[in-house]
Length: 220
Ligand code: DX5
Ligand code: ZN
Image (cartoon, rainbow, N blue to C red; front, side, top):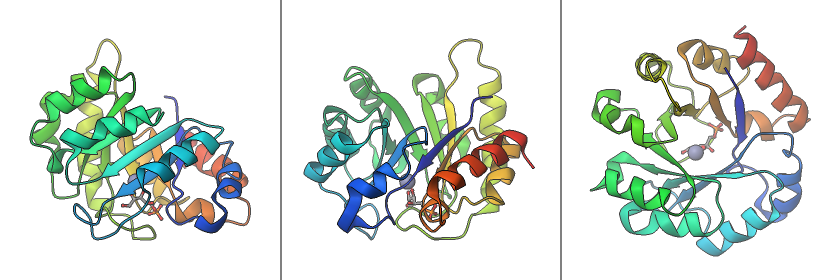
């Protein structure tokens, strides 16, 4: 199974973002956390800042929208040049139409669920998306502890995805990923891993990316 590592720049040094982005260019995707202070109690990058980050990034950008109105606004992030756009199921009134709308804008489409949302709730949308994001913390902040109780949800999702005969969605986890917890998440079936603090607090982010990749591939 292919493994993907996605550094989150949420807790990088925002006063020198270009350098911070360059430090993680050996990763697969740059994870961009967009927060509106409504869906989550925190605010991050404006659309204009997202455009600049995407222009500065040598690797594809994975935008994770923690915003209240994805049915209207998710498409704006597809237009910024994101490679993939992930929105929250809980914030959407019509996820099927937002998925279709994003697809027609040529991006990969991700659907995210918060810790209290079951896999069953979104199972019917699995064949429509390119990635399912199972949050392993309550969205809003970096540096929180990995919620191991989300692993049964990852297992359920992996079980459903393994029954796909054609193109199968990626299974992403986000929150509290470290050299230890990535093994637990990989064993449960995740293949795409967001890591913020683990990568940016490391002395060498690129070395940490290699170690995370290895730990997830070997699952030990
Ligand atoms: C949290 C964000 C995460 C966050 C992860 O709401 O979605 O992407 O940056 O940070 P760590 O890896 O520090 O938990
Ligand atoms: Zn995120």
